[in-house]
Length: 266
Ligand SMILES: NC(=O)c1ccc[n+]([C@@H]2O[C@H](COP(=O)([O-])OP(=O)(O)OC[C@H]3O[C@@H](n4cnc5c(N)ncnc54)[C@H](OP(=O)(O)O)[C@@H]3O)[C@@H](O)[C@H]2O)c1
View (cartoon, rainbow, N blue to C red):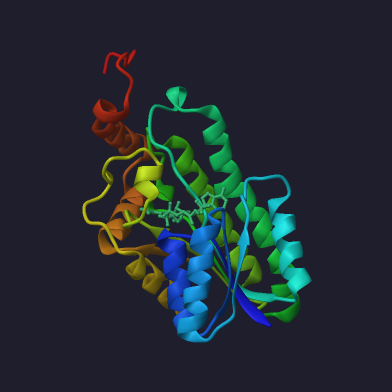
């Protein structure tokens, strides 16, 4: 059986991918930590769209999570033709004051789990000369972002990594996309300790982000920025020097997220 595997499918953008692809009759494997949400969603999608939907409850930052996930889908005999590496989180604040374990956990989820899962499922796609991988990056991946330092750096990795392997695998008929949304209406901001999306005006819906991704996959593009203002923001990074962008963002966010003792003269 041929399946689409979506990580972080219990809410937000991952859930929107699941809903949309179920409508298009993809059979699904949904992964996250929240069993109840996954159970409800798979039941609903199976009933409504007459597809097979299986869920795996897994903390993708736990030891050997990528191996355990792969072994589970192998055990079930599920062939993963589409992989959507969506699970991720961010944290906002003065890096020196943020919880170190949480920062390292973010690198584990946003980078290590994504690389491990991609490597494992890519083997079968290469052998079959067919497959789609969508990696959730971010409009934050195009510049260093003070007070969002670790998150923006993890997403810079995802954008770079995804584009590189997109080219390596293009001639094997495998489409790999770095999907870069800007502010999107999900629990992401609350989970990241952000009261309101500050980087850009205008928040997209999860459905808009999914639509952008599927159009980009149809066109075989390795990178897409979702939303016009986010796209403009991403190309600004190519014309304005990095240190100026970082300075401007740092100044804008310092009052809200900086420490009381700025320690600096300007
Ligand atoms: N929302 C935005 O503005 C925005 C913008 C750019 C990029 N993105 C990216 O889009 C992706 C999805 O984010 P979202 O906005 O949809 O956020 P969200 O609503 O917070 O969803 C995050 C998903 O990841 C799962 N998850 C978190 N930690 C996990 C772990 N350790 N193991 C397994 N699953 C885990 C969560 O499920 P459980 O809690 O059930 O595990 C949830 O399903 C992320 O990679 C994010 O960086 C979001």
